[in-house]
Length: 254
Image 1 (spheres, rainbow, N blue to C red):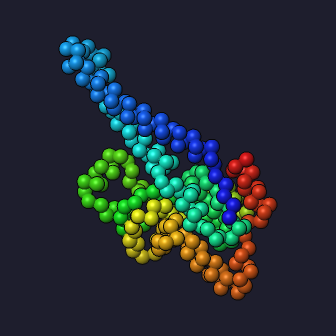
Image 2: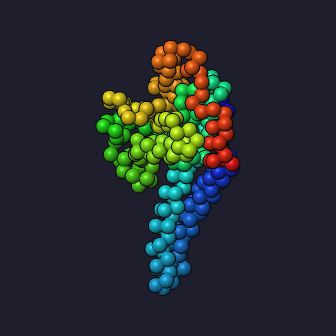
């Protein structure tokens, strides 16, 4: 499998994450000192100082939220591009995985099984999936702090559909007959997901040791294609020609 990753974007965002971490840490320390400066000096602060003292904590809080969000998306291990690539070992060498070029589709996979717009989740919590919604199985206090950090699981089904629609729009002029399918992939193998019924979008693990996982899902799709076509060779054909893949890359990467 060929992997094409927007390394410049990933590297830049990881650097920003590092700067935010130290910047937030520094802001909290300086903010604490600044707020208590009147007690240290014994002087009565004027109105401007009082206003600045009142503003420092909200600013530090916002910086903390942004720092945590950036860390989860760009610096948290395992990194999505690595986890997906590792989970797809053994996939056809004709396949191509694109990382961080086609937002809101963070990852796009073109392989004999089809074209897939992939969104990922880093969460390592317990979830139940009911009626198209993710429900956290954590206790109330954990949910409260999660809400404060704005690091909830969000709305993966809606995001996956947006990602699918975006890639479908790009391919509309290149390969209008090709269907784009959405996938939700959890990259942390510690996550636990209880799925009720058949979700509209497959929910998978990147880790091939967990079930259901991305590799076994694609294997089942290939088996189904072979049964429908009545010919295993047809199941190995790519959904896009080399020329169409080149056109797709020129339109979105170069």
